[in-house]
Amino acid sequence: MILLDAPQQSRRSLLPHLHLDWPLFTGLLLLAAGGLAVLYSASGESSEMVLRQVTRLSIAFLLMFVFAQITPETLRRWTPLVFGSGLLLLLAVLVMGEIGKGAQRWLDLGVFRFQPSEMMKMAVPLMVAWYLAETPLPPPLRRILTGVVIFVVPALLIAKQPDLGTALLILSAGAFVLLFAGLPWRLVSFTALLAVPAALILWHYGMHDYQRRRVLTFLNPESDPLGAGYHIIQSTIAIGSGGLYGKGWLNGTQSHLEFLPERHTDFIFAVIGEEFGLLGILLLLALYLFIILRCLYIASRAQDTFTRLLAGGLTMTFLVYVFVNIGMVTGLLPVVGVPLPLVSYGGSSMVTLMASFGMLMSIHTHRKLLKT
Image (cartoon, one colour):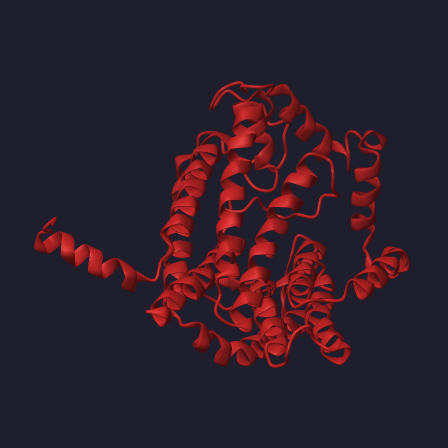
């Protein structure tokens, strides 16, 4: 028999009450630490920017810890209020929102600015999961159509700001919850057929001129190499120049000589490719894959319909974040302004993501307590 001293016993008894999933927490911590190292290089070795990012990461991890303590049942009770409040805030943005860089996305609360669209990244999968959990699965057509309305309305309000990138994330979050609920494949195929006419309508009536230019540039970046195509061209040059092993940390020429725009935010993946090469990219992708697989495992072990749908929806939203950012930086997708999770410099999206991971941890750890 192995005897533990009092401090060891105290630590072991305390850990389960923190409601943290340690494999997921470790993966997130490694990703954030690596992101700080890359940010230091991408920012031109700016200690001030790294310190600001550390502050934001600290707030985000604290929020993750807070959400991990909230039971899934409490989340379920508060879901309609959170979603309704988010819709009202989106309407307030359209009426009195602060305009910046040609977009009306923020509410000025005096002390800080608040972007309600970030709140909806959590509220939409919460609400769709809450609504579908009230009926046996797979849901009937009436429930499916109502679920579509739940995530289409906020997506349209966000696209009006305009913020097409966030609107697409909102749509994907709601759609993935529907898919996890057992959406019939006949309906999925029918929806796919409607994608072409819907895209034409969006092109002519729902997109601004600069958004159309982004799509055209994505199809042919060389058509405007010094204008709209500059970002993608410089990004692919940076990634390609890294080769297998990269040029080394702090030795990226495209980023340090300022050929690469937005190198510390949306295009930070190109800095990773240039300085750490293919091996660095594969290591980053492996870390993302570990986090996603752990979240899917949590979803598969959820105890009820609400938590299973919510966990699956939040996980796939994170996957879309990663896929869209890497896709646009490598020229596989149009540029839509989606940051690389926990690596890009910024605060709003990071806080939202970490709150989502907190909910995932709550789903898993409270399930363990209920089982015992």
